[in-house]
Image (cartoon, rainbow, N blue to C red; front, side, top):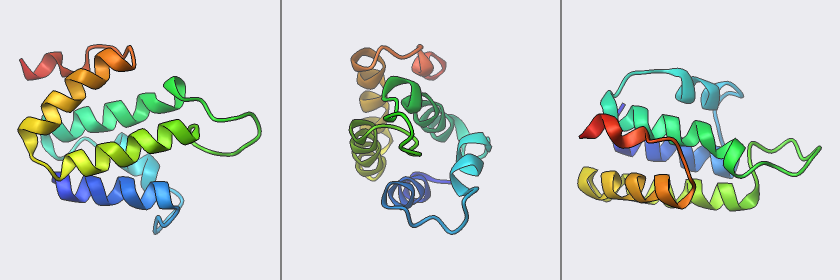
Length: 104
């Protein structure tokens, strides 16, 4: 998987246009695509805890979390260097575990 494909999956997830109800789970659990894509997956997997959905909404995360996913989808298309910078800043902004330590 490359960054364009990851961006496409995220955009389809946010818009509700996944081909299968399991596509998002598959995206989060697969480990192909290398370290950068795996960091993106880890970040996406943390969003539901950082931006929990309203009770009984059935959503993955809150609207604010979905907005972060859309931002990430756009950043994925801007190149690996920009993506690494964005992920490092996201760790600080959203108080995430140090996902990017493996990039050093």
